[in-house]
Image 1 (cartoon, one colour):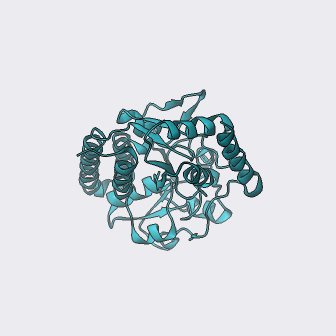
Image 2 (cartoon, helix red, strand yellow; image 1 turned 90 degrees about the vertical axis):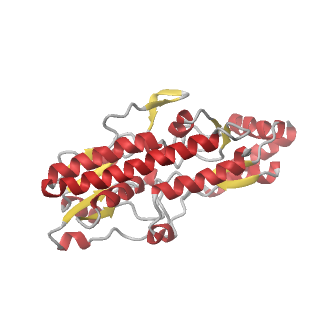
Length: 309
């Protein structure tokens, strides 16, 4: 126990000295090209709806991700230039007031049609904080399908002449999400462990609920400024030491301090579990999709949870 407490103290010192900063090296501004054309301008707050929207609109509209690649999503606040982009948009898509309170506050203050993509989804309470809900609905592909339907409906309302086109593309995307769900379900049914060990702000609550998994994380809530609790760090280390854990997972765009220290102490592998809130500049330029990220996650989960073919 003394050794475990030493590790906990080391983790807390790392936070005290350096904070929980985001990795914001790869930042680009939103594309403003749509503002100079007559094409529909669709502005999105996070990467999943950006990716879904661009799949649906094809060449019929311009889709803008207002969140600069490389910026951690939970701490984002729009700049004056972002407000100009939003004011010039035809449609603004956001996840919901729990995920983006700044977006919810814009209701009534911009001319764009504003669509909350969580409409029709029952939000899940956080385990230890019933007054809070988990906003990461897209991590369950089935809920992502509802988001796609909401996007498609809103597009057909503002651009009726291309309604059939949007409907067809949305149906193709929904089928791809159904196929993804099937692949994930079949793969995770063959893993030896059903518990995801995370050193980060765990964003996969809907995912673990959908696929019958469990998870452990030393954090409470999703704020990028939050610090891990010593009690939960101890519990996580003890679980690793008492089980045949293969890996500890970390999240995208956040310095993985806790995961790194625990990995070094317990000698298990560190693996990325990409929540797709946002992407790096390289990922953005490569056009990586939500489905690609989820399939890459599945391959890492096979390693971390032990896959038995």
